[in-house]
Image: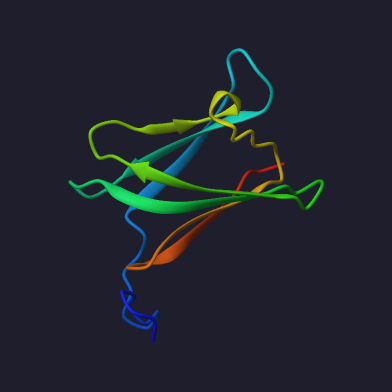
Length: 100
């Protein structure tokens, strides 16, 4: 077992929801992430391109005060077919595929 992590057998469901909207002024879509707990939540966001297979990985700090929106201005452009993962040592990884 790694220090600071919980075995996946007892890890809880990742406390967030992920939605998408078309970017208003740029390419692709914007991720809209809402946490379902009343505390800030650091997470590792991984976006894998469905078309190219390239990986964009970054740390994000999700806040319960307002939805976290990530799009091309933040360096996270997503397109239909992309695979999104949110990970934290204390929760199961949340995976979402942007529909084609």
